[in-house]
Length: 127
Image (cartoon, rainbow, N blue to C red):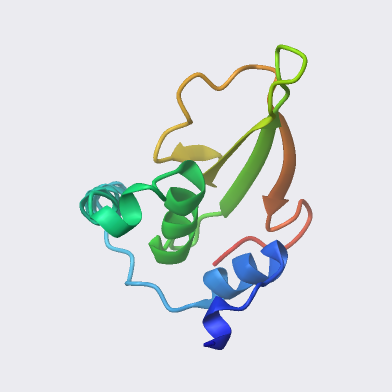
């Protein structure tokens, strides 16, 4: 099995994605739209269709978007269930200088609590 497919801790995966070479930044808004277009094209393919979720989209943005000198962070939240027995809902997204990239998940409630962000608060910004 290739080492790229071995299980890896989330902080290690994010550090690896952050360190990977990215296409050079041209225009942040245009780069975001280009990544969205490519995501949509790939995620329509049968193999990826069932994997279309905010986590995959977040990892794609975090891997391929070059924020230039801006602060890019990835955020993970949980939204507690409203009814007993319901599952927790998890969400993820990327921010650049505090602005959400790619849109927040629809219906994200105010009860959502951030459980992790990378780089960790007080840590180095990504690129």
